[in-house]
Length: 109
Image (tube, rainbow, N blue to C red; front, side):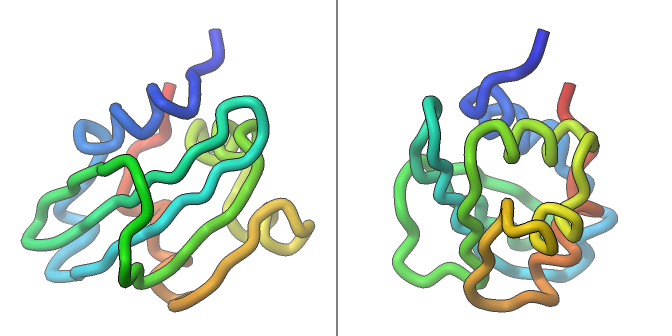
């Protein structure tokens, strides 16, 4: 059974791998469109990960994608690079931070 967008965001703190984030400090803004649309932001700092519903005023990077794309990316089915290259993922802000994101979390599911 596929996870919902909300379940993925709720599970991110448990899937977070602080050893991969090191001393990084960033805010990732997610704008999800489609049936399970919404805005979430993920704050990574001091080896911790906090997920909040809503829009952060000063994100490091903003990601916009459809709900189905996010579920596939979070489960490891679709790479962020491939999603970006095929136009399924739109990025605004620090591209280097976006490239590291996948390594910060264990795949959902």
